[in-house]
Length: 251
Image (cartoon, rainbow, N blue to C red):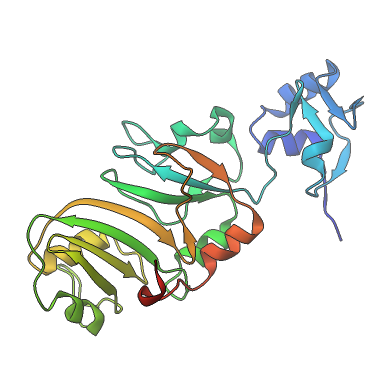
């Protein structure tokens, strides 16, 4: 059964303003449903995908409904927090989206100095499915290192015995493919704090640059320049939750 929601609550949760401000929008004829003026802000509408095409606010199509998933090519220097100092990934999205309830949150943060594929969603259960250690959504990173890799680096990461400094629980096995003496591709099955950088530090190395290009079976879209983003289709969301191809099957 399709849920219904009052227009004032829907627009408020999408960041269009307070209940009073949404009521004013409706009274002034700036909210239309199927081309007709919405008579009252307490009108209930079915919360279904077609609503985004039927409802307009101030002459523009309704913002995406709850369940939004965005893929971004996170640029260098931006943080994933909502309120840290300095550039935020949320600054790259429409300003009104900062006021959505529930808010958009990143599904597995990238630190300020890491670039690449970042997913943001207002779907709490989906977010937890992506970041859960039990998820098959492994993450792949390309790392440029300060020093040539140890000969046994791949074996150590695959062993499931590596313990990070300050911890007592070993990491889950990780896949490492060496592309050059100081360039490696690593795929991890969990998301501990600064995990990839700390993994290489435990191997006696230092990460100069780090870029994530895959989550699950979802690759960073080739058409996304740094700082660009787009809304994912259901099939792409499913790919982000799927098991990634094995390294041997990569191009």
